Image (cartoon, rainbow, N blue to C red; front, top):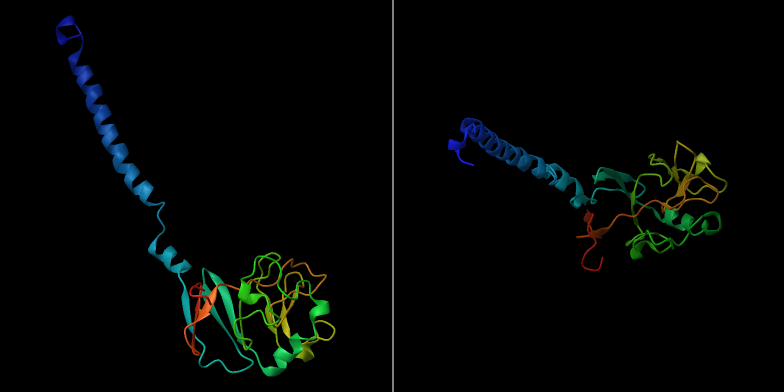
Amino acid sequence: MSCDEKVDCGRRRLIVATAAVGGVAGAAAAVPFLASFAPSERAKAAGAPVEADISKLAPGEMMTVEWRGKPVWIIRRTKEMLDGLKKLDAKLADPKSNKPMQPEYAKNEYRSIKPEYLVAVGICTHLGCSPSEKFNPATAVEPDWQGGFLCPCHGSTFDLAGRVYTGKPAPDNLEIPPHKYLSDAKIVIGDDSKGA
């Protein structure tokens, strides 16, 4: 049809113009919407590896760093703390960390690369509460308590290697995050490349 056949050409032009403007506006709105799916710089940084200086951490002390929005504990264990770990296997649900969720370097009695240091995510594996430190054996949280962690929410207990005691609500040992040592004084959490 042409405009000569009594068709309202003004109306046709208006429909075409409106469709074109609507298409351009839709495309303009889609660009920021689609860009919002990309992670922000803050989100990228939250998942990035974190360096920690452990040079000032004295034996028996713990420091906390944040990685991926989670508290990561770094504990410098004393000889007494390490000796106490050997007495607990019969009381623990997974003493050798055989469940597949742990990195290979956590599958030993110390659950660490270097026995002196424990690096663990400080979140209970039951419902996500944060256990509190009970390093002093005199606190007697369990019979023959050698020190460790107590989850205040539902009573799960963990030893100084982050291993859960049997009969507790927590189904697994505390998570060992990927990590590696850059030197005796520096550790990186979130990266265990180069054969950690």
